[in-house]
Length: 220
Image 1 (tube, one colour):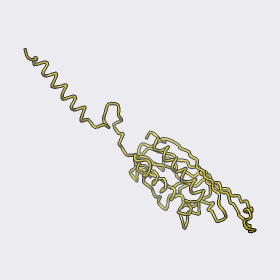
Image 2 (tube, one colour):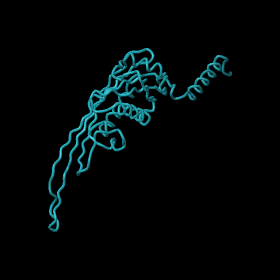
Image 3 (cartoon, one colour):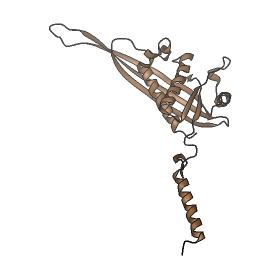
Image 4 (tube, one colour):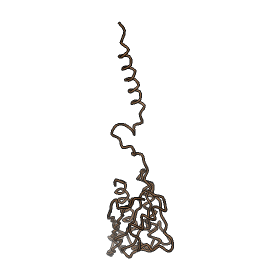
């Protein structure tokens, strides 16, 4: 006796179900988040200087560093640098105003950043190299230690409300045999490459990288 009509129907349904599961996109597998591949656009406002070590141009440049780091190491984040109207004072920005700027820029989240600390200390020590063939030479070693602390407050757009307040440090030390070093964030003017190679510039880049890591790990 052949299989019953009921058995044939059940087998057909089972086969269709197995085929559908086999061709199902991996991102939609059971238990996987539906928006796992979704990109979040973050509006990056110029960083406010609370350290007194930089100028307005440098504040905008830090925002571009954050954007570049997002593009490099956080594929789920799309950084968009926001510019301020000439009538808007950076020091007057708060969460509510930041959200309004985010709405105008049509971003998902807005980042309100602050430079809490940007400092460097320098010391020098002189001495003599060992005598070779009766000839001696003096050397001056300069030691520079730099520290940067950044804070980033994330706000939802358009619903409003703060998502997280993130604070990260960055530090770098270097020894130089003579020569000059930049010890102020304002040195960004004129030659940003030279500044970024300085101890303070490297400390800033470390803080920016860690800030982006924390942003990427934050549930939006």
